[in-house]
Amino acid sequence: MNRKNIIGIPIKNLEEPMSRLASTLDKNQRITLQIGLIKNLAECFRDKDNDIFLISNDSEIKRLAKQLKINFFNTKSVGLNKEVIEFSNNFKNYHKWMICHSDLPYLTKHFAKTINQEIEGSEILIAKSKDSGTPFIAGTVSFDEFRFGVKSFDKHSKYLKENKYEYKQIFNTEFTFELDDESDYQKFLLNQPRWFKKLTI
Image 1 (cartoon, rainbow, N blue to C red):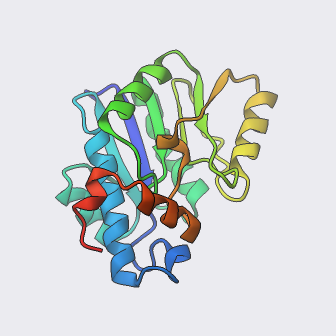
Image 2: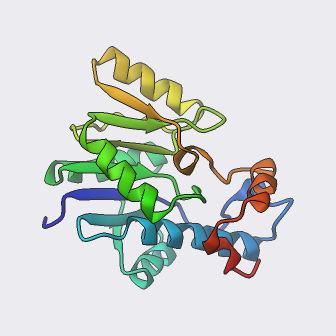
């Protein structure tokens, strides 16, 4: 371990990505969009201090990681929580860790650096999406009690309170706005980031 920070981006596969956008975009468009989102996250977090991993057991995601020149964590578990908990065994080798959902469209290099500095002074940082999901969680302390799924922010914050973690909620759009459903996509089209304008969708 030569780097200070480990970043995990869970992504199941590209067989049926972003399924809640199926009424708006066809499968090929959704694949293009999902890959574009992952590429942007990889570029934003790319830094000499960061080890970036795609968390999956899918061979296509492994190829994508190689193409992006980032790491691939081949999980043996099934289900998002189990996969991230398995990945979290690596946290002890780093100063800071981050788990970032793959559908955050507004992350920039500036905010990736800003959040890195903010984690420095916190045990746990956590973001809340519009449906009380957890699109981003990070920390400097050992943690493996992930509660992803329905209302995961509420479950995470309850666990953190009960177990006396010092945690801070972050409210930046860059870490709270997920490209999850059709209404998100329509809002997104009104405020398109630079990386998206280069895609042909």
